[in-house]
Length: 595
Image (cartoon, rainbow, N blue to C red; front, side, top):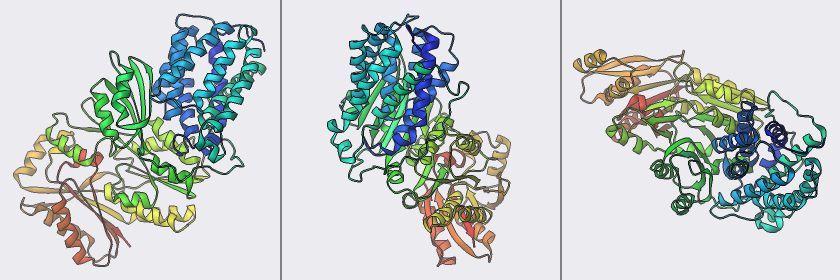
């Protein structure tokens, strides 16, 4: 159908159709993703960014074109994921600035606005690179400007300009050596062409699919090999993102500060509302600097080393935990365990558990900060994004988590996984904590490593859940008192009687008292003996020990347990911030998995 002008409602429909088309092809985009790093998530990142735009547009359909365009830009900034998402966000911001105050756009006005958006997209990067989505956008923009005065309807204009965008995409391997070596075009550039093709299809047919809800299902697998070269060095392994809001930011100053902290830097948005993206070695330090400039929100960090391994050599079954699971780092690497981090806040400062705040930093701040930290479940959008990435590389998923009766995390995991397509998927309540969950995960990891079937893995995990018990010995009740989980009266009574409470998690998933020891002297030695009595003469398969900045006590506990169980492997780790919020400093945990 011929369209002579674009208004707010038509912009919504055209863009909506483009978004639907890229969602249909996101799996393919993941497979050809080799630049800037081969982490296999370009399709997922672009889809997530555009889904945020679609959801925002649906609630602002009555707005004139100029105002709707700004809502699109804001949604893109808030939901941008990865390099490609941040570049798209800056493109839409540039477009919004160009059409501010306008209710309709002729083809010539549209071409001018896209030209401004193209220039804006380049400004988002500290080091723009040709052979990427930028080259495709620039070529399409130039074609629009050249042809807009000859074609007064959008159908003819889009048909003519799309051909040049497609040709620009075909040239990307000649511009980037890494693409030529892998034999693929730029994944983000392909995604942008997918958007344009979806837009053109709608203009031709007038048929807008799925007007009530965009479909997030994956396209059928493509008949091409995955291309993730092994020779790319991940010097900066953490893909780090956040939104920063404030009175006004200097983009160049932010670039200058971040240059020595990483690469793949993208700063997208307006001076008051920006999405920052970079690859870095120290995401916590990046967030600390940005926090000094304005308010941070939507912090996200992905470990691209894990993503790269999944993309290059995937197992059939993905193993997922939340960050309340405590295990030695080498086991996360050995079993390729994917972690969904919970969030925690000290007052207005938000942190990503174990990523933007380490255990040492957390426990030090616990001593000095007047605000007692609070935990919150992982954002639903992040949960969906992680599972969408995994679905591109695994056919099954087993996700093991802290009990639903102790946290809202498991419910959030179920919600985020609900619409993601796997051949088989299972979310399992571990009915445990910390290293207790860790022992269950080891059982799952060994089963997957041995090539067991999905059904056998689930049976082994369910048995491990039933056979695992965790005990937590507290140094004091200060943390759970400040967190509101114990009254002042009870705290004073326990302290007056010199009691040492020992906590456990029951098989209903509730934290409860396992008992007490008496006397403050050598209380953790008493705690270890208490656990040994609970074990009794039952056969033990695994033991785990964790501590909260209390290594000497943990070493003592391990020695005692080794004397009693010389042939049992004892896994050692530290209590992460998520549990440390409630257990406090100096806590000691022992988990036992019975044979």
